Length: 304
Ligand code: TXA
Ligand code: MG
Image (cartoon, rainbow, N blue to C red; front, side, top):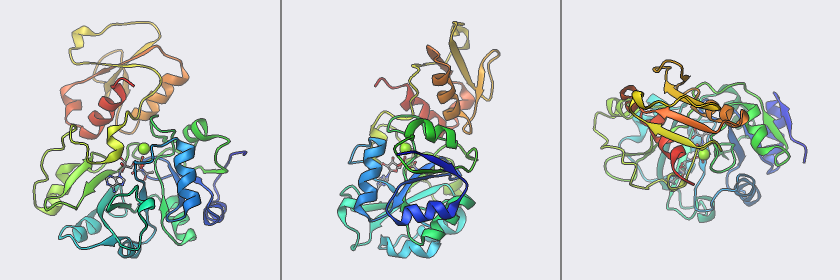
């Protein structure tokens, strides 16, 4: 199958309505979209990404009113989260509505819902007129794609269409929050910080613990380039080696390649394109205050 790159949201919506997959831009990363609740689309997403079947997908909505039909029960926090953060880079987990079949939620009693703020994503969702599941549009395990070119590299000839929305504004995935327990819990740190959410809800959320695996997707090695990654925290240890990069947060170290949350995945993919032999990442104090970045870096550095 030949993969076309387009700006046409109408073409995207037409294919999606037929149960085909289309990669779409969002404000976080590109998503591989398919119709929620349609077997053919769900199966194709897992196949194309080579994604483990126990890793559930996020349901994307184009209107806030679509939420009602997906969730069951109530949470005292739902309304303020919606009001403050949606549309935007926050994914909310609650119990799923009873009419939703188990096979569309990886056999979990819960469902993850997000309303992207990207105008192209919203336009496509609204033209389709129903929810779309959309994991990041990379091959499972690779860094998430932040440009149409990244998607093309991973998925060419596997999907009919990529909608080009340029570079993603945020470059790191949405924050995933669960409202299942009495105290909401962050399952995946992301663009919206724990502190921002705590301010809005007026409660403390408890420390995000990397060791607790609550979000199935978090147990797999992830976000990793082919180039091996080494972490160091003493700038005096820096080795200058040919064909390798030292990455430092916002260019803190001299002679290093700078990264931020907007560009981490881009750097990973550039390193692979350049066929570098190593990436060294400086774990500075400043970086330690960036939980989403720390989380992705630690996962990417895990041995396969
Ligand atoms: O920013 C984003 O969230 C992007 C864009 C495309 O929207 N999507 C994304 O999807 O990152 P994905 O599939 O790559 O990551 C979804 C994460 C996984 O860690 C998955 O395990 C978790 O959300 N998740 C989904 N449903 C869940 C559920 N019911 N309970 C716990 N975790 C869930
Ligand atoms: Mg992903």
